[in-house]
Amino acid sequence: MISRKTKYVQLLVVFSPIFFLLSSCIEKLDFFDEDQEVQLVIYGLLTDNFERQIVSVSKTSAVGLAPMGVRDARVSLLTASGDKYRYNSTGSGEYILEGFAAIEGESYALEVILEDNVYISKYEKMPELLADDNISFEFNKEPFRTETPESVFTVISETTLPSSSDPIYLRWTVEETYFWPLLHFPGTGFPPPPPPPCFISDVIEPDRINLFDGSGSSSRIGNFVLGKRLVDNSFLYPFFVSVRQLSINREAYEYWEKIKIVINNQGSLFDIPPAPVIGNISNVEDQNEIVLGFFEVAKTKVTRVYTTRADVPFSLVDPCQYFPSIPENSYPSECKSCDARAQGRRWTNTPPDWWKFD
Image (cartoon, rainbow, N blue to C red; front, side, top):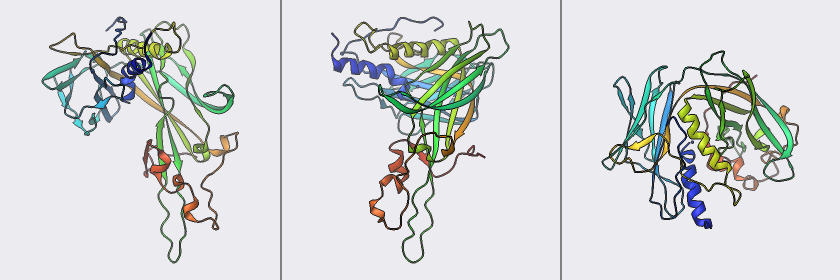
């Protein structure tokens, strides 16, 4: 029987690429025991948008802790035409390439040099096709985190495939960004200026993997649930949902399909036990070393929708409603600090460039 500690270590290894974010045939899943060595995890996503391209490099822990970022790697993007672009380290295991966009038809590989070892991915070609996403949302009462009905927000896509005989493979990620004002306490004498509001972002259902294989579909239109979350006071103010469609190649699709299989098969004694999923990155000198993660090249587009309080059919309680008779120190910290409200999520005081609504 697999011990609880061993199973936890295995799950961390399976999810390592997702935590940081996230071959043409499906390879056999390689199982390992609790004596498994620490393993390198490399994940990179390259898109055709002029944006910050990100690669994460980390190592798993043999004691069941979350993977630790590797700070001293040298990370470069290679092109099939012979160019090389260096990523810059942020000091936390994340490496960035600013303002770069992949070119349609070009092939790219990732090179990571660490401790005199050279790791290189297979060359991946930028896909050419995208589908059309018509994004909508629903508010419902349904079981979600418990067996009893809860107030749930659901993101849905009606997706129309391109009229092409070429295969298309899709993956979606869903992110929320909502507005949160901080309380402005008048004070005495000359009142201070009001504090800037918070714009708080997070991934909706980060462990959900949204995939679609259009190569064998007989219909050009499909309906997909892309994400769910509980309704709370985040919906008191404008709440944006950003759906990123990634058009990927078959190898990337099969990689994420294997990750999805492992995630969905962990609850029963008769399920396949968690296992590391091997991607497209290897040690040039030691092909026997197991390297986790994947270098993904994707054609991408983002579709956004937003909600306001008027859309929400449930009662919402504002914890920061101001009353002059209530002293400042009686209000929750989330009413006075973006950091306290975000609780580890990303936040900024500057609205995104796309923050526009009627």
